[in-house]
Amino acid sequence: MTREEVKLWVQLKHLNARGYHFRRQAPSRGFILDFAEFNCRLIVEVDGSQHSDPAHEQKDARRDRIFKSDGFTILRFWNFQINREMDGVMDQILSVLPPTPPALRATSPGGEEKKFSA
Image (tube, rainbow, N blue to C red; front, side, top):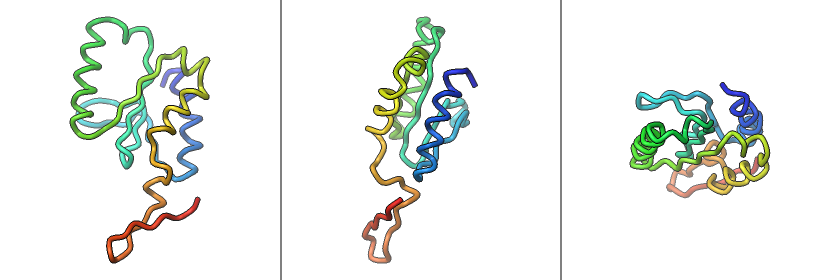
């Protein structure tokens, strides 16, 4: 993992403690995802300067299309955002997560969703 990925992982682990289940360097469909919360269908990528290369941009766009067609939300952050704007990065991540983590939800026998407090 890059230095910026490690910084973000430290923050995402706090979300895991609240009931989310982020994985790092998660393999899926022949790709390695920087971070994924599969229950919430969220992928978080941390991009360095190489991602601004046109060939790399095309590769990223193709990959994003594949996962978006599977219902995933993809958030991409530049290294400088991780280094200088971590609060904003986390706010964006939290804005797309459900307020109650899937791990804390249960379904009653009648099919009604019940929420449990963390």
